[in-house]
Figure (cartoon, rainbow, N blue to C red):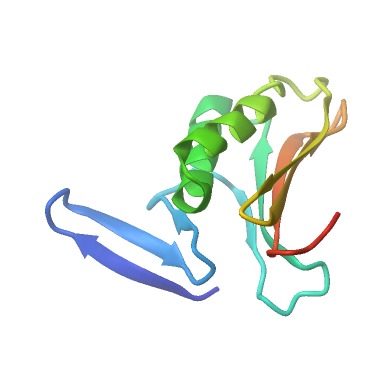
Length: 127
């Protein structure tokens, strides 16, 4: 994982930017973030897993922040609002895709599965 770290003196916060354009909040509570190298065979860029066994809303907010850092707050909210359909392990979130800036984004979680996953593929990859 390659990243740049920047001190923002005005707000007294640290901004961590991953080499492919995502900003991960300092002290994130998300326990399942996979950031893939550019040459990975799946051609994915990032996968965010939101764990139903721990408090959900803070994870949804962080996922929204991460996606907004690359795709803008409006589209990030739309995507994460769909993921918010997962309230318990038993809830199913049927697969749904978005195309944003030539990148495919997928949200999915089968009923009985412990997490809801948000996956973003590299630009131009068709799923």
